[in-house]
Length: 319
Image (cartoon, rainbow, N blue to C red; front, side, top):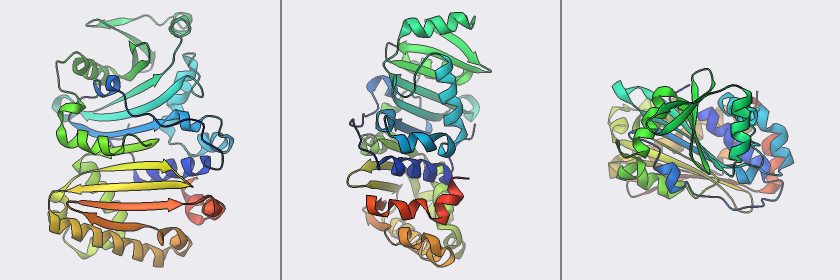
């Protein structure tokens, strides 16, 4: 599994959810629960959370879901269904978290929150002849390859390889610190986690994202000072008369925050001139500074959805 989702991964997620607004949303988004927060260890590299309730009964999104979702989401969807979990109705949220474990190893866990039938779950495990191994007081079930699963409580399932899941269980029992103890990460998360789709990145992931976003603009300046100033970033996707996508890049320097904002504006300008098919969308990207932070905002209304779907950008991202 990669340490970070690529920029293309986020764009695919954005486009998938944009498609979904052609149908009415039936429920409100849910913040990451205290139970889920208590499982995620620090230091965090990345968290990606999706409110599955916003994807229910949205036929255009469902028809393109398998085509657009990154492979990791598709594989995980299949694994859940094999355990008797209906991902269309049983799941409220799905959260992927990557954290640094022993020897700085990148560990990924998946937190699934919803309303599950424990009887049905254990019936499928028994039918597959999957028997538990124990870590402390937690029963771990090897469901596929090196992937383990444990039931945290009646509404929360935890998945990951053995090292990742043991690290998360240590955090749950208080042996190692959880996300709420890291002030900078927790503040970034609080700013975005009420959105249906959101993500936060640590400093290293933010550097990768900014470099990718700048493209040629990153070549005209020494990025070393800027890279050192990048603290992290948060993404959020909301629905109100269309789809609204916001990115907030957190820095440690007021001057360099302005430099980053200007470089992003230049990157957008260069991209519009080299990729004319994207110009109608890039024209609507707003970039501004707010203290130490750089805010990037993009929205699309329902009237322009068809042109987005017919664009070369959409075709390239949905291959």
